[in-house]
Image 1 (tube, one colour):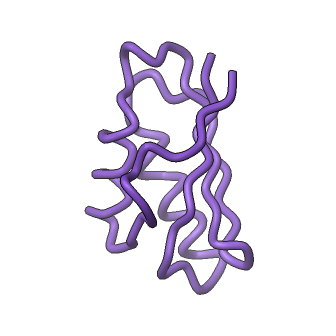
Image 2: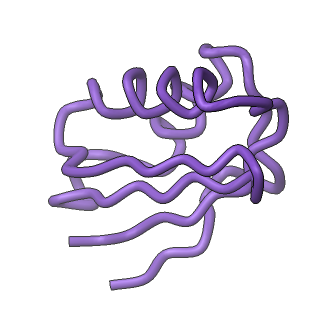
Length: 78
């Protein structure tokens, strides 16, 4: 398993958190998504890093209308 910590701009409320959790959670191989609009952070737990690339998570968040800070790889922790 791998955990990605992303800084996400544009989340203003719990509805934003739920939207990100829903769209990222639909990606195959994602086990858990936690979003915190007050801190502007999203945590994504991936079962197999070979299945879900950080770029795919980044793209899903961007398509939902939010901005991922940095290159989108996030901080990976195992």
